[in-house]
Each structure stands twice: as structure tokens, then as C-alpha cells.
Amino acid sequence: SAGFLIQLGATSANTIFVLYTGFRYHWTSTDVGLLLMAWGGGNIFGMAILAPRLAEWFGERVTLIAGLSLLAIGFAGLGLARTSFEFCLACVPACLGNICGPPLQALETRQVSATEQGRLQGALTSLVALTGLIGPIFFTQVFAWSIAFETSWSGVAYYIGGGLMAAALPIAFTASRSQRHLSAQDGD
Image 1 (cartoon, helix red, strand yellow):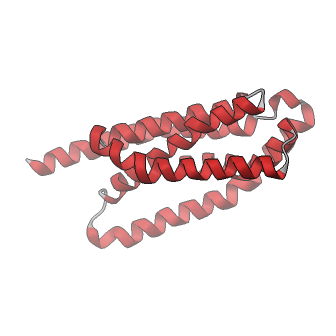
Image 2 (cartoon, helix red, strand yellow):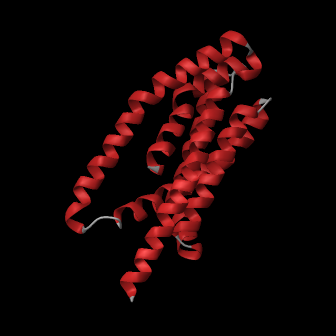
């Protein structure tokens, strides 16, 4: 599912952020704390304020696809950033990409009946938990491997995270398209 790929890709940032910025840019705990505070504020802004408005104006499908695209671009940018400033700039699309969360959940909840909502939420929570188990092990090993051989590849974990977000795009596109088609049939 698209949600699984998104969550797994996101663990690349969650897992190696402190290690990566310390290694690549020699950031202090204050530097990391300030950026993570801004990152959290950007996530809140994107999911709570921006996503509902964009979904209302352009639809959930467009908001979902735009958010996933921003996530893929942002995560690739995190890995490609040569300087601290470029890394901070790449955080902007990575944060704004979280606009995909609310429309994804809305589309998922419409796939099942009201009596199946608990099972759906349980399954989604299980997938998040699974990514929380797999992601940290995988991405810390990728990061360790990437810095052991060559520092120019230290961002490969972010490339993989962005690749997972990009891989979620066709799945989300297809699922949201079939959801739109089903909604149109129900209205007839």
C-alpha cells in the first residue's frame, strides 16, 4: 500500500537525522533541535492547515499526489544537499509533502464500510508499527555502510526514502483513481 511505502520512507529521516547532520554538516544538538522544531511546525502547518484547504480547493486526489511528489523531491534534496543551507531548503518540500497524509487517510477510510473502520485503523496502525521496526534497522545500516566507504554517498538513506515515496505515487494514483470512479458510480 502507498501508506506503507510513505511510512517506511519517512523512517529514513526519523532514524538518521541526528547522525546524518552531525556527520555531514557537524551540527550541534542546538542546530538539530532548532531545525527539528521548525520541521515539526512545518508538519503541523502542512497537515492541519494546508492539507484541508488544498483538498477542498483541488480535491483529495490532487492533494495526495502533490504531497507525495513534494516528499519524494524533498527527501532526494536532503540526500543531495551539499551544505547546511541546502539541507534546510530541502526540508521545506519534505515538510510540505505531509499534506498527503490527511487525504490518504480520507481515501482509505472510504474504501471500507462503517462497520470495518476499526479493522482498517488497526491494520494501518500495524503497518506503521512494522515500519517502525524495519525502518530504523534498515536505514541505520544503510547509513553506516554509506559512510564506511565514501562520504559523498552519505545521503543514500535519504535517496532510498525519496525512492519509496516516489514508488508510492503510482499506487496512490491508481487507488485514488479507482476510488473516484467508485464514488462516481455510487452517485448514479
